[in-house]
Length: 343
Image 1 (spheres, rainbow, N blue to C red):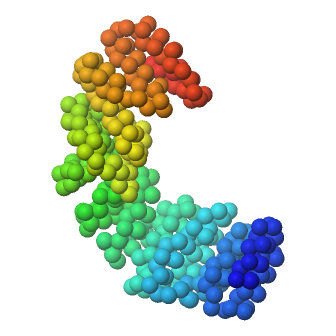
Image 2: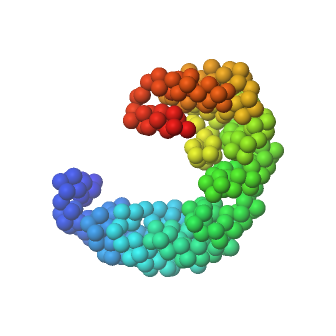
Image 3: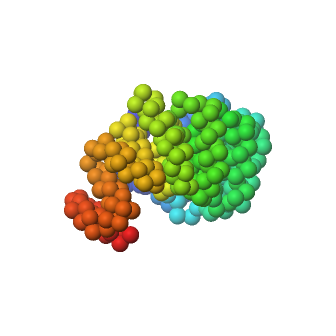
């Protein structure tokens, strides 16, 4: 407690050298203290002396109980998140993790952690090789697939790791939704829809895929399919189904994430339903969906949708006047209004 307090006081005073001296005394008095090792490693990195952190990190891993070691290995890249020299940091991580890269209990975590370090250093070749090796060792491990997802769409070869994991773990809804987000970001809407349709068939009571499915059908100008998916989403949300899972899916063409609260979720669905009705020139139905929205934060969006409907009916002057009358809460609102009027 005394060593910890002395170190913390020095840190609060921004006295790095004194903090380091306290930690070194801590380690000398209590050589088996993993907390002292963690403090020392973090201090050295913060003081821009990352090369000196290799010894305390290696010792920290050695002293960490075997069951807890993979979690520590996974967290290792975060020690160097603010490092100025990412390549040097990746090389240091490689040295620290060398004993664990082929150990059965740690190889997946070690390869993924090292892969993340090389990805941070912008060496996608090494990161991809490590993701592949980790996936080959354990196709059901989530870590390699998440690492591969971070490389998409810039490294197309990484997609095989993600696809392999989905085949090995078809029940992982979160990963499939993250993959859908990646596909959507690459404008591969048909493939994203295929994955979402599989999800809705395997678990029709899960709400988020229906919202994303509706948004993607709208993007592909399929208003009837979009309406069917969105109505199912509204039904599930109003019935009390969860509107999010651990990894939210993309909603609509701009990559906006599925909204977290029920109110926000329904607002997003109603806006999309109004858009689908507008595509089919069913303006009364579109207005009925918009009338359900009473969220002040979406007021501008609602009025812009109304203006769009007026413009489709050749009522351009009314549409422009409607846009101009919308209150502006932020500079972004003013820009959105100008853009909408120009369109």
